[in-house]
Image 1 (tube, rainbow, N blue to C red):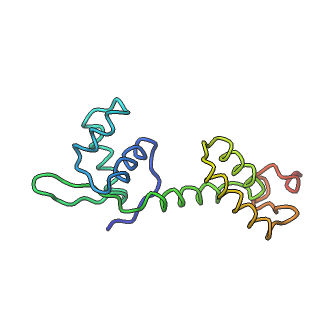
Image 2 (spheres, rainbow, N blue to C red):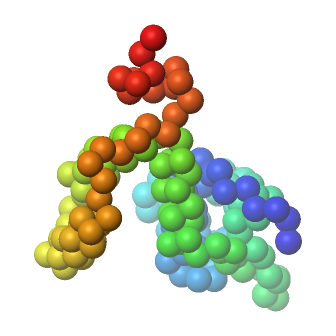
Image 3 (tube, rainbow, N blue to C red):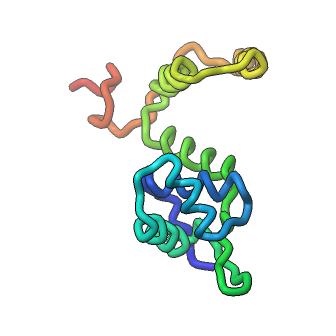
Length: 147
């Protein structure tokens, strides 16, 4: 299997979401799903499929005359990787505000909120007075880095 390239475009995300929802799909089914939402031609969608196979995000297997596509990474693993990558690229001091912003923007169920409350209660046990800046001087706006 080729080395996975987990950097994908918004359009490739759309394709992956369709495949994650179905486990295995032929290109015709993927095209049908995506054309309900996007004004994309068949050739465009097939280009995205080819790119995702090349990136190692999708695998193909022959089924008679057609190919079936399946994801080589689970959706929750991919989302976790994407979030890790995002948080690796921001100042540790900004993590709390970033998480609060995600919660603010999200539509949440009562169960979701209960889970968040349990997580916050657990985090309180290891909370620190102030989060230390994790940046190289000059890469963020923390007071400690002003010259």
